[in-house]
Image 1: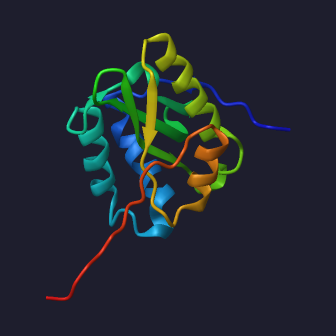
Image 2 (image 1 turned 45 degrees about the horizontal axis):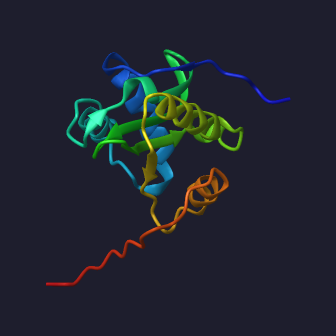
Length: 150
């Protein structure tokens, strides 16, 4: 049986909880070297450094302080929103939490007059790519990371 968790709209006061969750979610992918770097990334999103934070269209699963998954959105151009942060604690993956959060976000965005939702995904992250495709997202661009020894 699928575990049902409450959805909430994350606020800035939950950044310490979210940073612990984000660090745990990315621990095996070298995404963040410490909890502070995760907290810095979350602050940048929630304080508007990456566009206007859409609190009412952003969702977290669980009840603070026990949040286990989160989807944070920002607005860029008029009518366009982006998924800036999407992560789930490893023990809670493959339970439909991110799907539920994205669906709730899409419903809220539609009711607020938004016409598109974009997401950036590393090419190597097959799980997120499949999730986004399942939810009707189409790949429009391919990002290529290149480096050179100097």
